[in-house]
Length: 165
Image 1 (cartoon, helix red, strand yellow):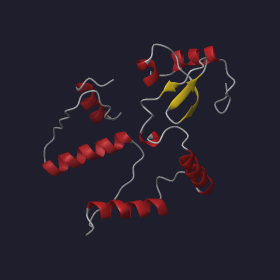
Image 2 (tube, one colour):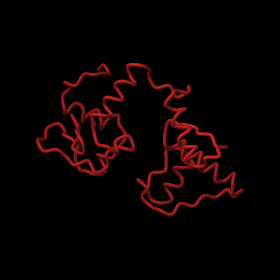
Image 3 (tube, one colour):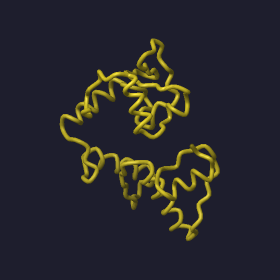
Image 4 (cartoon, one colour):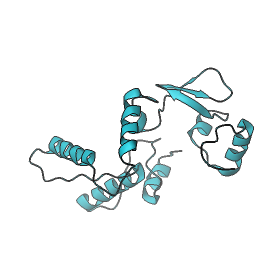
């Protein structure tokens, strides 16, 4: 089976592939059935083999705060994709302008620098290291159970101690 844009594969075959090769995801813990999204708009997600949409109360992560397929976001993403693919290792005009905006919001006198990272785990890890460095303490306490703190070893340890999924 080629991986790509083959959207005509059999639903039961996809379920078999999930059961054989994929780790559980949110869908498998929130519902007691296999949900395969086929399209989404705003806060609604339509899944294979069902007519009624699901209300997406998770909306993914911060990338979907405005809902699925928001027209302005789609336009902006398309414009950006036509100019330049994602370049984490390089500065871009947008990153530099956002860096200035964030530093000015924190302290107009400056003295701060912004680092853009690629995911939550590394950000949580960096925050934990920053706290340990600043306080000179090695332990980290988290007070809110049920949160996902990341996939790294220290972040996952915090999460497991709190009973996260």
